[in-house]
Image 1 (cartoon, rainbow over the protein chains, first blue to last red):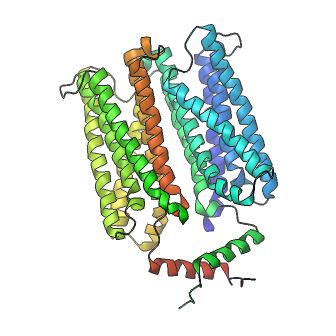
Image 2 (image 1 turned 60 degrees about the horizontal axis):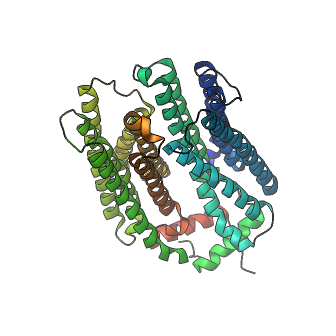
Image 3 (image 1 turned 90 degrees about the vertical axis):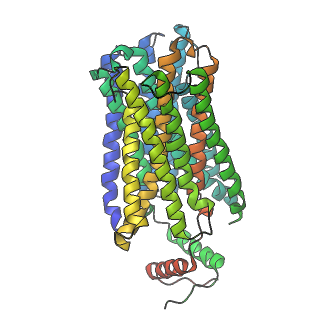
Length: 246
Length: 246
């Protein structure tokens, strides 16, 4: 368990990366793409990247980290914080989606034709379903303990998968936006292109950092004593006799 | 361990998805983009997507699956097969990289300016390093058992991360290629756009299937009896007395 002392550094690193991603997206849209508005113009589009990076990447990632950061709180308060952060992520990403649909409608651009939109929408829909299932399975006692323990590994797997798909969709969006806006100058390593590429790499780093923290074995929450005894008991039952030490 | 009976279905599903990805890439480049050549032309570029999907996604994914598919072979033959499949992936992806660099040079296009190229090259370089480290740590006895057991979880984490980055880089490449080739018609849901978007989703599905199979707890290889006894022994040592059953 010696590695546990390094956990705060990884968490701090993830927060620096996450804030950097949000700030760089804000600067890209604010400085290079003409700022923000809510009038169907290209400035309304600019709300979209900012909301998606803030909601579906940064807040989503932090919701995932909750179980590793607050290690000694009760499981229930962790679940509530996890659900609340995800709810904020959900609301902010809905604002981001409305912005882009609004902009497309005003500019008479087809909806949902690009790979970015397919991946992004799939991610959003699965995230919404996963959030509802999470509420019903873990926060409110609507299902049996057996069903809960069947769903838990799936919830964890899809949780990380959706963070990955979120980051991937952002990268697709960055590439689309750059090719629509600066196709002529992108290959000359202009400031905007390099900034947006750097944003892409930082988003990957944020995802990797969160993924590493939550999958690393010795960063796991210690089970409470009751759970630990139960798990050892089941282990004994399922493995038969414990061989005596040599 | 009841879930183990479903493993062959997941593996079969992954293979269907993997073959479909390679075939669709081949059809996209062969039918819609004018076929293949090795003369610095756009037809030479077409070799690039095919090699990357075949090498860095399909063969890479299959190399990862080896440990779940051949469950009763010796660990050493598994390691050799794992390393060989990765070597094939490496060689084929080098051909794919040469194709795109050659094309860019002939067409006087800058190298390495896009987010796709940054992510793709990062993935390739990390994959090459990981392959060399894998050889040195696990296949040849060049390091201590202690170092090996320190590196193993990192090797596993980076292995899945690089598969994810590979798939992500392919999706960025698909978006770039579509916007360079059919920007005018992409939003009208033309055949080529829909085919390429579908390829993107199938690549994601392949990655998800491989990721699910290798992370699912009850799909793990059973440890050999010697290892199992040792692990239980260590468990006993580190957890103190096993509580007696009620």
